Image 1 (cartoon, helix red, strand yellow):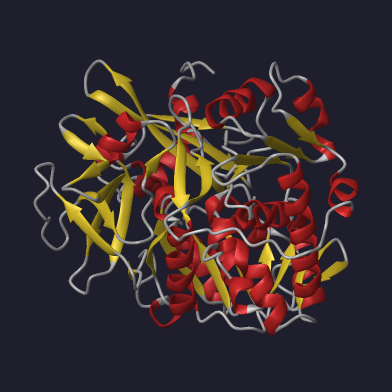
Image 2: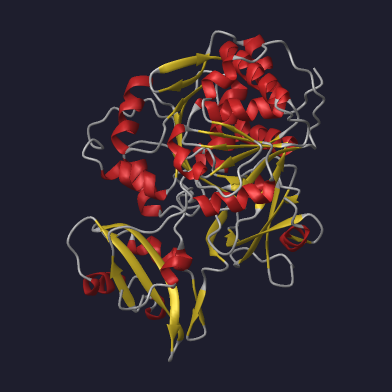
Length: 494
């Protein structure tokens, strides 16, 4: 087989375990043999439509096996797969399509209105996926694909400015899969719940691809929903799942939390942003293994991981560098920070992106000391080499000459029993330069003054927010990250 990339995986899996279930979606099971056949037929249709090595194929829609099949089919042809955030508006989608210039856009029926509003559609639009696929030739496709060829373009969440298209090669995906198989002990019996959006790097690369490579089963949810998650855990004996803070917080607040049978869960994994230690302990007290990792879209995404054996002793840590990568914490002059000293996190390894699609300026700015990726995150190593992520560089603010890290304040506020979610930002102040403003979603009655009193004695006075806004919800990106830029822009009387 000439295909050394991810496009060859369905054929290899079908040869090894044809009758095992690869995907479960809304009660329908698909075997590895079926995935191979469907992927090959889809690739044949895409080739008939003119897709050649290096061409982009975009996908727009909620979680569905069709997203994975489209990715594999694109990679069979040596094409570049571009999964798009289906929650975005037409102008936002149009910008990404204009940037990557795909030959084909495959979209789910739910996205027909957005696609119809696009000013310039790609040459081929596929809305009836099953009909399009069914007419394909199942004969083997043999296109030479190398590990250094680009596999994905993933658009960053765009919390500030226009999103950039982070390129990931087949080698990036393969090495990230190696790292996950080493760090998580993924087995062929895995029942992995895919509940985070698959257009995001964590759900796609951290859970679905390692499970597929190992021959396990991915149970795919169309979208995150608390009761649906409980139902699938019970029905399928889910062993592994990934989530972000808002998902895990909502899951633990459910009335079903205390009595549900969660004994099948071997590993809960989080990433994307620091998880409050108080929330992690809620899961640990329930007897569940909760492992936090750290990474970025540009690191495919795993850079560090906290293995299960250390999850209690090192609660709150993002773990140590993954097996095939190196991580540094540096000062502004790029010298290595001392143990416990905060600095910017840099990552180097075969999992690191070669850069941004058609954006050499952004690519050059993203790297320091040659091939060390600048994360834009602030972290510190402890004496045993475990990384603790403090905050984003851009989220830190200075109040009265003192650095304030919002993630630290958020972690303490989250310990209050009435706090369901929280985000802290810095806002201008005539006396102190900047002060904190906390946006708090509450799950029980509480006043701003009570929250301020709760922090008094737990944090230095300059870290305690001047303003507290009790809100119904926090603005988020499609991947679940809080859009702090939108919070900073809110007038103080809102």
